[in-house]
Amino acid sequence: MRFTTPGLRARFELLDVAWAELTWANIIAASTDEQAAIARAASHIPLDLADFDEKTLGHMEYELELLANKARQYRVHIIGHSHIDMNWLWTWSDTHNVIYRDFNNIL
Image (cartoon, rainbow, N blue to C red):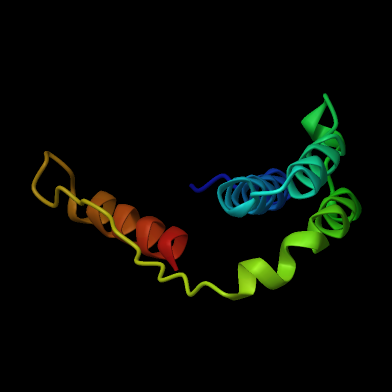
């Protein structure tokens, strides 16, 4: 049996995108205006993360638009990684499920 929570997974992915965008913006921000844009973007994150949605992410991205051209000057390489203990007291079925889960998450 496999339990999934599509709504929770979708919200987690949105929050992960928001975190990545804010982190990257914070790294490349140099001016006071750019740092203020990050603060405005972060202010859109609700205290109750259950209220975070695509519209909220859109408001954040609008605030970060000042940094868009600067961000496009970089090339980011993303390399997935996972460590799988195939012989760690797992059945073949468990091993298969862990491998499938990890590759699915990485991709």
